[in-house]
Length: 238
Image (cartoon, rainbow, N blue to C red; front, side, top):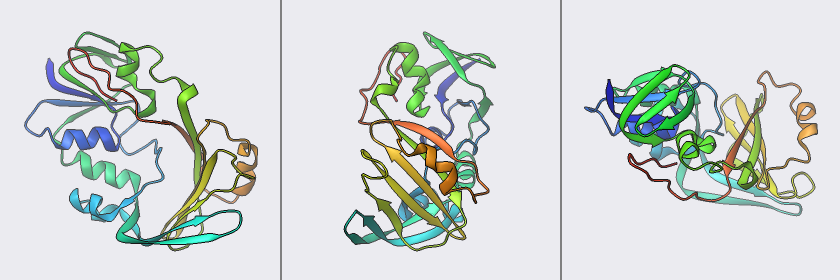
């Protein structure tokens, strides 16, 4: 069986691509079930979710952003509303708009149009890499594409804390080359800390600061800058 499009990655990017391909034979590959393995603070402008008819995933709407530094606090009144949202619900809402097939499998390699996975081999006329910083397909074409030396790193958890607005702290005493954030989401808040140099000197304090949280911290990496598109026949981009 040959698919018109194979998408590696079943989070926001991959599912958004799939929604534009209804009527085509599309396969979405992800190593985890759709809607799990959250690696996002899950905050965006409200019109984005309205565009995808995903208002039901909204947890809280915000009208201000706050920047906290060592010596001052600054409030930015946004000209448009922001929101925090439920990751799993948004993913399943997008999936329901796709008509795509889903296979839970990790990409292990690529030979021409054949994508090798832990669930077998799949052939596609067009391949899309939406696997995030791991760049599963692009890395198969260009070894070293996902080099961790050019990645930022973050940790986040959810704590029982309520507030208004999206908050960011630039405090070098906590993270010399990074930022911390708090995104309220109704009865709880996402609290995170990230470093643009891929290092968190305060990571050892994390279990203490969120010891009361019922959620385990999650971590992720992300490219520091936009990476060049990797193109072959078929084309793959990340």
